[in-house]
Image (cartoon, helix red, strand yellow):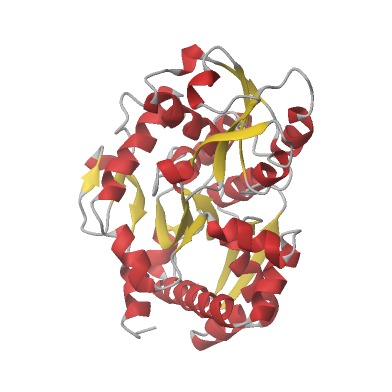
Length: 354
């Protein structure tokens, strides 16, 4: 899972929150021009394809607006730019939407629930084939990323805690080469890095995100106030996404385009898709977004972020930042809702009302 081409160093989180606290969000008012940020990851490649092939323009023209779709080589920077108000929407995981823009005070709405990691993220041990063997080991991972979250959930599954291992912050760009050194015996990372490391005969996958389905969610989010004042922007995003999902399913050239843009071939792209639960239809996405599981899983993510002090310096509990679900129920502080799962635009797509 390559959500970041260069680095996913969460030391940037604190800086992003600081920026958000002093920067205004994207200007909330009726407007015609919108900017969307995205970064390389199997579940987000459709946005680049849509921009390159005219799907974005088709839907923007339908609503009399313009949508600029910009690719970022640094995932965290794309979120920082969104948080600072330079972009109206961004591709992001649920965890990072909560810890960066939401924690920074930027009210954010998940317009498209695109997929969840279903094996893309993995714990790999060198020469050991049981998760229990991780006890006492040094674990290389990108600190405070979804890899760190996966490690926490893996340890919990065998009644261990982070104190039972030593975490070493390692850039995703360095992970595969680090694994080849004698000192590195345990790593947590994402595809395609996982696939590269597993080419080593001594590399053993002992736990992956298929054990925690629906917890690492990949989204297209938008500034809530911008969306409220410009519902056509949300409709256009939904139209773009589901048109592109259809192309991915039916057009071999579309998959070839996405594979090449992500730095792999179709076989490599298919390998990533196999361990991604992609919500190709609005009905699939709505069922997930409106189900009961997402509430429990959101609480797990909030608890991890609170334990790591990533919900803001004033957070007193895991529910310090409220998360609203499509039925309008809220986990956490109802007076401080900053992250919202909204099925409105996905439902419009399902109903043929875009």
